[in-house]
Length: 197
Image (cartoon, rainbow, N blue to C red; front, side):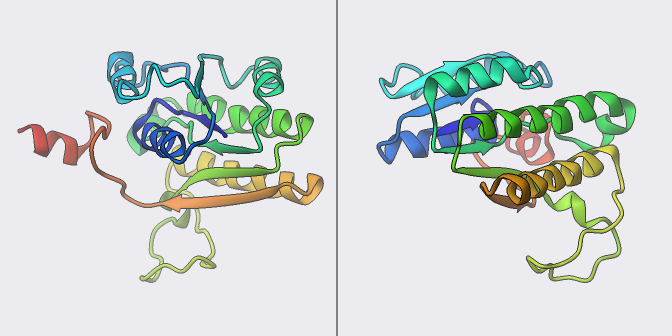
């Protein structure tokens, strides 16, 4: 198993669970400074020395580096949890979001194809639904017009994954996550701030 963004909030929980279930896990995380690297390292502190955990700090936009690490580890399943999140910052820095979300996703998918990764699980976002959508949402509900560069990049990630599945026959699952909260949540988010207050 491989987990991109494995030192992040969701990714670190996934890494722990996969190790607990007996899997060998490759955690890929470059500790991007969107929030402090010390927080991300603390997320993995309980499993940092685990004998079935391998760590890589490569840049996911570097397709050759991704190909190399996947070629060495040979995962059957890759969980693509890495992405730069946040609506407001995406409006200020849209090109950063395109690079770190869209370009990195294509590099990961290309490397998965080269090394015959059987399944890719992609962390999507509820932001792809846009606004003025009827509730409750259904899994087959159409995505709406993106309301931010972040939403547009998350939809682009989904479309790249769908194209990859269609062209290469890889099984791809997209999980459109809504508001996720809990231990190790990003320190800048409201629920995390409320808990610390």
